[in-house]
Structure formats: structure tokens, C-alpha cells
Image 1 (cartoon, helix red, strand yellow):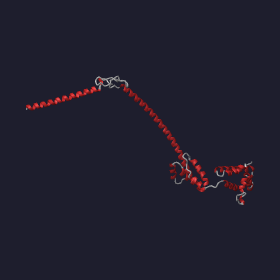
Image 2: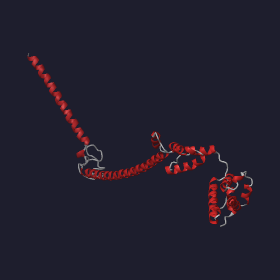
Image 3: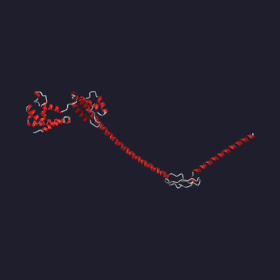
Image 4: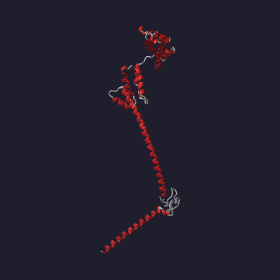
Length: 291
């Protein structure tokens, strides 16, 4: 089994500023080396032989870098030491302060679920060297970084909050929120259906009212001609009244004529009242004279 020399070290070194590619190349290198050592049975041989084979497979560039390493004599024949030194050479020096800053400022996205958020927090926490504080700091970041304020308040009320309990609480909140949205959607659909039925009934009632109004309009007697007819179909339209000389009504139903008649009756009534008053005065005068 032959491993391409150009791939193992040159590509590994050319991507030393890209952490993702470094990890990928490192894993591929270890995997290929493992397959090679296993297939050839070299892994059962001494460390000195394994180191020699590794450097031969890695190529001349790896050999040149290896010669610059200050390795004690006891470690020169250890394959793991060689791989770690080459990895340290290829990888850029990490800024622990900045790496931790990235972790502590990582908040949950607006549409990001809790599982995705926790997974990314764990990946960002690995190079931070938190050691025994690993779970506790991830728990704290969850409490401070989640989107839901109600869930955050609930987590803060927990006296002995663990990472597992914090994740379970956030999951339960997400499920309940989805269920509430589903219920709300169903209720809104029902309300809209009721509104549509109400609008339909209103239109029907309004139609019946209009029909009754039209029917009543047709059945009502016109004050201008004292007949029943449709709207704008009055026979008195544009006809001149013989009583008041105005148009659009017959003399028989003239309002001005009726008003004059009422005024006449009131006038006669007042005349009679005056005559009675005068008669009474004359009688009183006669009685006084007789006395």
C-alpha cells in the first residue's frame, strides 16, 4: 500500500492557517498511516522503524522539518511524539483569549434549535482548555445565550441546575412553543370559519331587508298622488297643482291647500271667541245698570 507523499505533508502545511482543513488533513494522515501500518504489519515493529517509515512516507519536506526539532534521544523513536511535533509545526499558535471570547459571546440564533446551539458551544469550548469547568461553562452560556426569556427565567430559578437539566428544559420549552403555535393556528382557522359564516348570514339578512324595503316602498301610498307605484314612477311628477300652482303633486293632495284650510278654521274660532267675550261684557253692563 502506497501513500502519496505530496498529499501528506505539503498540503497539510499549505493550509496551516485554516483550522478546519488542518483537522481534516490530520485525520486523513492518521487514517492513512494507520491503514498502512496495519496492512504491512509495521505497527507491531519497534518505534524506530515506525518513525523511519513515517518520515519516508511524509516526504523530504517533513524530513527537513523533523531535523530542526529539538527532541530528546528517548523520544526520537516514538511515533506519537513525532506526529505531535509535526502537528504543532503545521498548526498556527492559538490565541486562547480570543478563542474564549468567541465562546462566551456565542448566542443562540433566532431560528436555531437548542440541540444545534449546544453542539456548536461544545465545539467552541474544546480548544478553550476549560478542563473540569467544561460542562459548567456550557451550562452558563446556555442560560445567558438562549433566545426565550421565559425559559431563561425558569433556568435561573433552579437551585442545582446541571447541563443536562438545562438542555432538557430548553427542549421542553421548544416543544411546548411548537404545540402552542399549532393550537393557535387551529383556533384562528376556526374563528375565520365562524366569521365567514357570520358574514354570509349578514349578507343574507341584508338582502332580505333590502327586499322588504323595496316591497314596502312599492306598497306605500304616495303623498303626492295617493297611489302605490315604484320609485320615480309617480303620475303627479311634473304636473302643476291647480291650488298652489306648484309641480309634482295633485291639487286634491296639496299640502298648501290643507294649511290654508287649517288657518281659516283657527281664524274663525278666534272670531267666535271674541264675540262671546264681547257679549259677556255687554250682559255685565246691563246687569249693573238694572241694579
